[in-house]
Length: 92
Image (tube, rainbow, N blue to C red; front, side, top):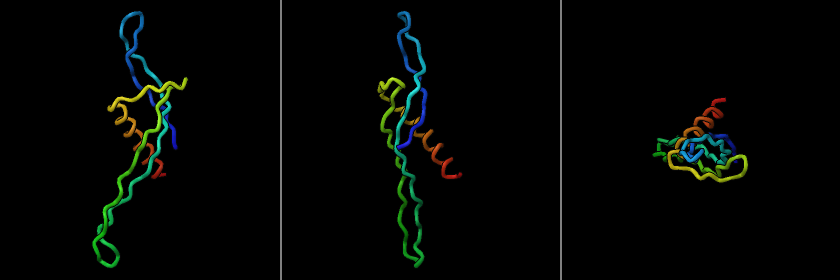
């Protein structure tokens, strides 16, 4: 399990008016890198497809432990960030 900090913007009521506030979330996730396709085996036989990467977001809580839930677009953005972080780790 790995952890990253991610900030979301959510509406809230401030003095009776809806405004947006930034919420810092602690996101815990599992990441399994994919494997490449193998086009042919050393003996010339056809190869096999690789496996896709897997990202599983386990939780997204604030510093007080409140689970904010995530909208689909937020999950997509977090997954993009995780891919960037993990691909940097593979290069170093």
